[in-house]
Length: 218
Image (cartoon, one colour):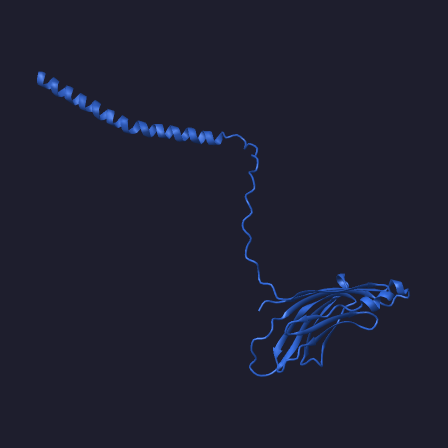
C-alpha cells in the first residue's frame, strides 16, 4: 500500500515538472505576441508629423575642376556707328588673323556689308567656310546654309551680313589633293548684325555688328 502511494506521488511530481516546462516554453511566446500587438497598435495611433527642423549649414564648396580646352584664338569683332558722318570712320572692323587659315575683315557701310576671309597661302590646300544665316525675326524669319570654298589668297571668301539677323559657322582648311595630313585647327564664329542704310534722314542711318571668333581645340 505504501509502495503504491510512493509511485503515485512520483507520477504526480513528474507531471507537475512536465507542465512547468511547457509553461516555461509557451509563456515567452505569448508575451512576444502581446508585445507585437502593442507595437502595431502604437503604429496605428501615431500622431501627425511635426514641423520640419531648421536646415543645417551649407557645406564648403568643393575644389574647382580642371579647366577645359581653350583655343589659342578668341577674338571679338565689332562695328558700331550711328549717323552717316561716322560711317566712314567706324564702318570697318580691325582685321583678325586666324592662324593657318587666313585674315578676316568685317565691313558695314554704304559701300559694303560683308565679312571677307582672305585665305593664307598654302599649296595643296583649300579654305572652306560653312555658314548658316538666320534672317528676320519671329515666324517671318528664314535661314539658309552655304558651303563656300577658296583655293588661294587671290579668291577671298565673301559672306554677306544679314540686314537683321545672325551668322554662325566654321572656317577650316582641307587638302586640295594627295593624302593630306594634319592641318590648322578650325575656327568657329558667331555674328549678329542690324542696319538701316536707306533712311532719307542721314543721321538716322546706322550699322551694328558684333561677332566672336574661337579657334577650336585640335
